[in-house]
Length: 91
Image 1 (cartoon, rainbow, N blue to C red):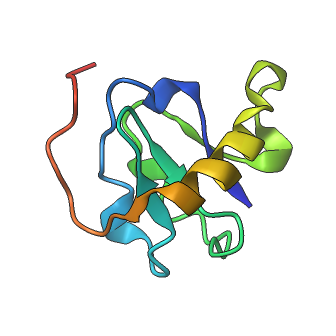
Image 2 (cartoon, rainbow, N blue to C red):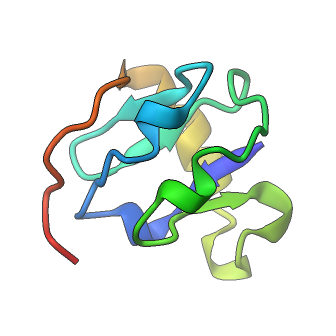
């Protein structure tokens, strides 16, 4: 499973959502989340993220491990996102 981590917070680039073949990205107010049961680990999104915020859970830096649970919880509450939108900030 892939996870969106801290670097996405406050910028919310959506380059990743347009390449996702299973539409597993969900949009929160400050960042995007990946639904853990919908992600097929194709890794198409990883090189598309300009802030390098997407990691396979096995490669997630230790200080961001809590994002596994955050992605699971928040993806259940948010709307799916499939189209590119303006980011919150230019990083």
